[in-house]
Length: 174
Image: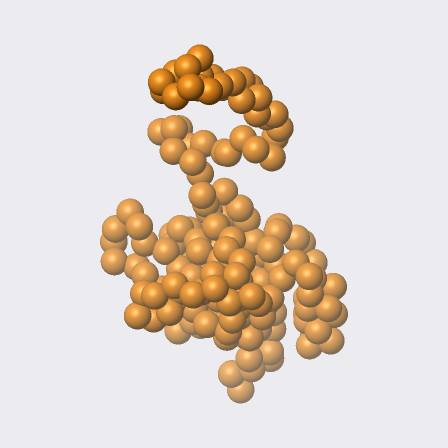
């Protein structure tokens, strides 16, 4: 794509300049129907580490979360300030329709749990859609090793759900 600037009256720029910008798939942003850049176009897979409750054994629930924005190296503090942290990763998802707090999730009937996700400290997030099945602690450790360069253990979760268009859940590793 060629872009030409208008003349600005300076000696060397009386005719404007022409810039040639190569366009590739990586340089073209994804757009929503309204023409805005789609910042929430990624999918991630969360593996919940659900501890035994005395009645049910420990289990590992998997859910693919849609409408995600993946941020690396940026951490938002509770007071709203932003800082750069080299090893931090934050998933911001607008898929609040499928989100349940850990308490709400625990109260769901077993046959409803595959329709929702939760997030809690020590859960594991893979930064893409994967379909690995995890049923044991050893398989959970293997999963973490397998995706150590494309995933993280959750260290914090922030919920911003107030019935507004900007509602989101943040899943953090810092």
